[in-house]
Image 1 (cartoon, rainbow, N blue to C red):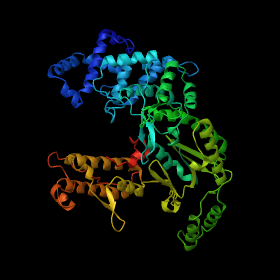
Image 2 (cartoon, rainbow, N blue to C red):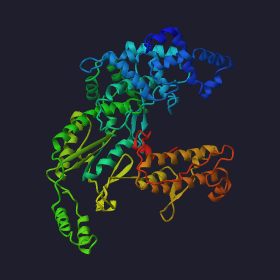
Image 3 (cartoon, rainbow, N blue to C red):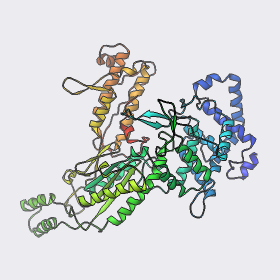
Image 4 (cartoon, one colour):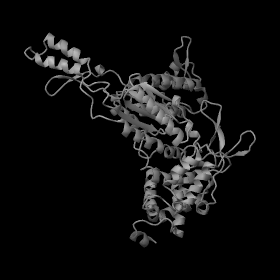
Length: 594
């Protein structure tokens, strides 16, 4: 078997030998031993046996990992996706349509690779609609599920409703069998490999190679020349996607009957009524909370991306803005006064007047531009044009979402605002300010020139303060001013757990808002978290004031036993650093709950 592996560049997963089965079982056992309950239930004899088997098969183990294009111990989904792309090429027709891809999903080793991707994610080890969890999973289970998938007998479980955030209304939220998420992950990997190259480059949400920061960076670099913006939030409408329209989009690139049948079963699995316990079916609601629900939304909104590109191509005209005649006239007068020495009062007065004039015509009727950015269910369309142009595009977008995507949408759900007034997008405040604030610099010839003013991407400090108040880090005093307060719900945690909790939020805020032009303003939020941590520890250790907490544990509130301390940023200088984020939803950036 080892000689065969050396001669073949890649071992075909579907030809799984008995030795490979043993190795795969070892990998599963090694992942599960991290769980304390599983480790306690495993006796010493089995543990030593497992370790010896792992060591004896180490070389073959690595080869099996390479056959999935995974580095040993890797948690990155990109390696699984790249392997899936290689396998998908075998099932691709000349018309770029895929058929027979159920054979990839029905491979036990592929399902095991997907299990390794999700096993450590929060919530995947908790119980769903039944008592089954990821604990105790073995190779036999993967073989049985693979057989059910290939024969078309696999059926997703029902979901149970969960309240919307800040709302008593219930929606079918996927809290079904955790083991079903392995199949969901496998389906997501395949669909991402098929659809990622087909999704518009203007879409940044829930894609392997795109981040929320990249969307904001595009605004920062290119948004300063657009006077108007159309804002849209269709995230709530995505809870109710018509299944027929969604399946039509998927069928345009996939003709594998069993794969399509599996997707239909997932969409129509329905949910259990919390009052009557009755099982209810639906033709509108998508499985919110499942691994692949964001991907389904991206597939549907690909129609919107295509239509907006068509609107852009027909809307734009002109090569560049026309020159501002008033600006050029002042420039001519300054040039005609070269007989005066540099810095003379006459030239200075004209230069000051010219500085308040734009060099190009702000509202040139012969120049129109459009820029479109979408992150999942949030989008902005920036335009250079009249208010009538903006209203016309707004109406076109409404028609696309209603007729092409089947969403319940109206014109009043989009806003048209001036970019100089500012707008919220992806947890940031975006605004264009006067070019006078950019200051002056000298050209190569020594003449004063204006610096280019980019769009300001700011931290919404007031929104963060409201979130702190909502999650009981602060309260309002008698003068209606925010003051820090203790998190009483954390008192029963250990000292180092409380400090780690606050560290998590402080570091998360600093990392995400590294792009903010008002980054120094974040110190106010960090101060409230710092004081809230001290008050929480004072309450836990029965100290009377936060001053006593600082006196006993120091400024960083270090735990005497573990040495874990509060990590406070030493430098919050503005860096315009767009380095990516793990946040999947804009609201996660402001989520301060435990």
